[in-house]
Amino acid sequence: MKKTDSQLQHDVMAELEWEPAVDHADIGVAVTDGVVTLSGYVKSCPEKAAAEKATLRVAGVRAIAEEIKVRFAYDPKTADHEIAQRILDTIAWAVSIPDDKMTVKVEQGWVTLTGKVDWHFQSQEAVRAASHVSGVMGVTNRIEVEQHPAPWDIKDRIVSAFRRQANLDAASVTVKTDGGIVTLGGTVKAWNERGIAERAAWSAPGVARVEDHIIVN
Image (cartoon, rainbow, N blue to C red; front, side):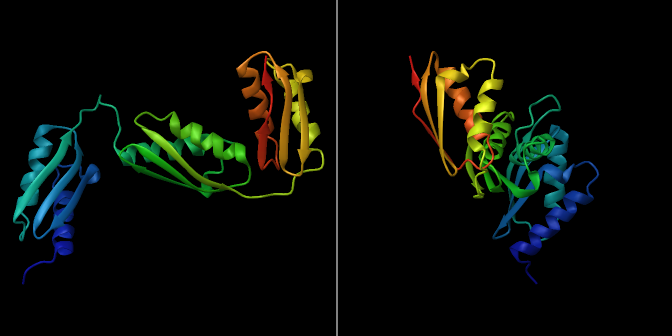
């Protein structure tokens, strides 16, 4: 009886796992009408040849489309699943990011982050962490920030945060709050001061939106 493509895929994957000369973990198998496409990475040319031979041993294989790449130990690890794992590890190490509420998808180096967090700064930290991983081509942020009631002292918290910034003249920046909406005003001497003020405002719990009207003079 002729094998279905899914049966053939299962058998090829099992044979690759069985073959001691092949590390099957980084090899992908797809089957269309009996034609097997091998993709992914191996550590040497002999391992690549061994994967081909193992595939051809499987009954029902009509042809092989070979897309496996040889990647040596010193080459950068830039496969999508490796990038995804490094992002997950980075997020797990970051105390400020709730890793149990996020999902990471990587497609051809492009990262999509989804999930829900309590505060905006957590979403921004996740994007920053993903962006710093080698091999990442770009990041799409689809993380939702859950709405929480703004604390009554939100303005005081933001002003206190401004005063802690060494590179910001806190007295030159004004803060107005309306629930979770923060409006920044005043004048600063440089663009980096404006950025510092905005990031500090976003970091306050309960902030849903920051309207930055600070003038750089």
